[in-house]
Image 1: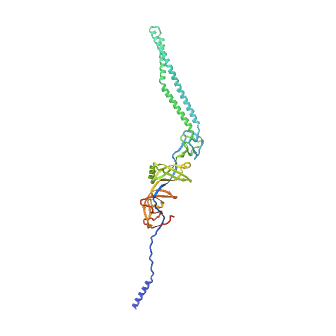
Image 2: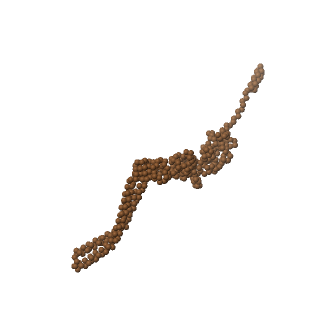
Image 3: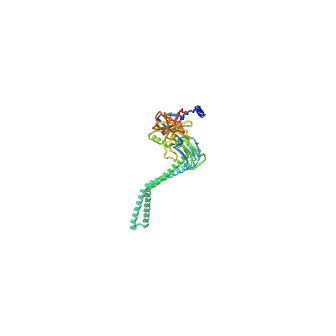
Length: 406
């Protein structure tokens, strides 16, 4: 019985072992991530920089009153297009005309004084020889009476009378000679008075002309501060206007592009901006880079003179224009999604695994209706496949599967 029990137990064990279920081996496959890629094609591409800024004017004039007067008539309104010399505004000229009349009277008075002095001088020149002859005769009379007085033939009173006549004649000659000597200085004084009166007259005429405010250049009126009947004082604002040909686009140029812009200017290249506003074309060219860096701005101010659109653009209008820089050599335009961080992209190798590559961002370009970034790296070669999908878990050697761009 013990042997039989052992044999039976072994048989049951063998039967259970033969009938146990067999587990299948599970093969673990690595997951691949679907991505889009583009082929690397090195070439020359122009850099386009998207700039935001506002329309300004190089020649912007705030016209003020040069005299105190009442506004008689205003001929323009805000937005009026005017030409150089057009009448903009009229001030009451009654006071200015009275000032002109007073100044004209002073000029006439000064001219009359000069004429009188000249006439007096000519009379002195003509009278001096006669006065000297009379003096000689009086002197001779004094000598004759003196001789007679010594002989006690003439009276002392007659001699004294002759001597008085001689003295008076000498004084008369001295006055005439003094008048002749001081003629030039008197004429200079009178001519200075005339010049002063003529200057006052010119100033009065100038003030009279200033009652008619005219456009200093071809431009547009941006604001009118007064209306008919207003009283304005010296320096009071009348209106603002800007010159059409001086409209410019003022924008902040990022610091990363400043060296390229400076180099392009040094090479004599014309740097242009272009875009559209209200479905109308706007173009301009760079005329200057700012001389001051504003704190926290991250760049410098660039000024672009507007070549097309200046006849309808408004001062202060905010624009979005693209600056085109000269072509960059050995660069690749890629979507912004292809760049990780600020200086890294991923190349897909033959095993569909990611390989990181350090790159340099050299600019942007508007291509196929999208804004793309231009990159350069000595490790990028023609024909390589570049990852253009932004993967949150992108790391080196990550397995990917290239699918259609969409």
